[in-house]
Amino acid sequence: MANVVKLPSSKAAGNNSSGGATVQSGGGDTLTVTLPLLKGTVGPAVADVRALYKNQGVFTYDPGFMSTAACQSGITYIDGDKGELMYRGYPIEQLAEHCSYLEVCYLLLFGELPNRTELEKFENTVMDHTMVHEQVATFYHGFRPDAHPMSILCGVTGALASFYHDSLDIHNPRHREVTAYRLIAKMPTLTAMAYKYSVGQPFMYPDNNLSYAGNFLRMMFAVPTKDYEVNPVIEQAMDRIFTLHADHEQNASTSTVRLAGSSGANPFACVAAGVATLWGPLHGGANEAVLKMLQEIGSEKNVPAFIAKVKDKLSETKLMGFGHRVYKNFDPRAKIMRETCHAVLKELNVKDPALDVAIALEAAALSDPYFIERKLYPNVDFYSGIILRAIGIPTPMFTCLFALSRTVGWIAHWMEMIGEPDQKIGRPRQLYTGPVRRDVPNLAKR
Ligand code: ACO
Figure (cartoon, rainbow, N blue to C red):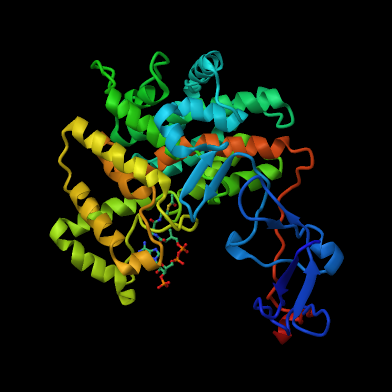
């Protein structure tokens, strides 16, 4: 038997009864409908409301998508209560430990881990696309040197569409695949160029003999006048950071890429929309805020006072890097970040007081009833800023690195969506609260 889902009335959802229609059924202010339940492979069931408007004449209301699945997807699964994250069924902890970022990219794009031959071919293909057209360099010079690197990245990613007219047929699977290679390969180049431009150093060409992460580090930190050797510990840490950020199912930027792509927009434009969304402080900018907070706290002895301030609602202070909309348990990425953070600081022999403050803060919060009751745990951003700073990446670049890593997730979702046979343009409905119909008064009478 089908399950019954009770929807709140349009009044209860905040409709203005004088301005819009109130749908009532059975004389009450609730509407009782029978909805089919869809089951995924894991996770909660999903009430299928697709025929609701056609059959009942009502929409559903869910700003912020608190209870709405906007699509079907077979890429990433999160169980926020258990603190579980899986790409194509593989736990993130295992992928971070055993696979390179490019292996993970292959998995996200094609659904299975590559064998040795497939991986080698994939790595070679991606690395063959790392260069950008020489003319791209001239775009950078159009930006002010103090431009935020995310504004540059947003612009140049979208601009790539003007270089690849030969492969912009989104209905051609081969074109889609080539575009995926290009985007994954060129984002590190574009990101490093944004950094080089901001510090006034010459752009470094990619070196395809290096690993994906090693090549990125070289493009960031090498200069043409000196040899540069990639530190393997930092290279591995960078690769792991890329993996941890590669995908996170229907987050704001991924949903934006899907929505933009649903109109048939080209993938470079869609990824530029993803970069723009990620730029927001509620999404990609939190690790920057964590670092600022740790610096403000300054020393371990100030931790109790800071915790007290966070618990005082009047202070409007949050413990940045704690809490998550989906995870009500440890963010599994945070645990790996903590280990990586210790490894990087040890390798570089960096004594960062921010790390001591972070450790003390984490311990204090995890044993405090305020955080325990609200299920607030460290998220992926709690330790990543410390690692990036130790590597020498300036704070404004943090979100660019997130964008670089997430590009594969965006493009995997875009490919999944475009490949669906009954793919439709994304077009949400609304709960109208504006004026009801009225006639335009004569100008003299207004
Ligand atoms: N510090 C102190 N209190 C917090 C925190 C925090 N970091 N996060 C949530 N709370 C409290 C809220 O004040 C609220 O308390 P109340 O019940 O007494 O009113 C309760 O916990 C529930 O919080 P919500 O805001 O409802 O949680 P929501 O799921 O909407 O927010 C969010 C999640 C935005 C991430 C929030 O936890 C936060 O602002 N954290 C700090 C910023 C941060 O680290 N963002 C990065 C997220 S990870 C990422 O985007 C990659």
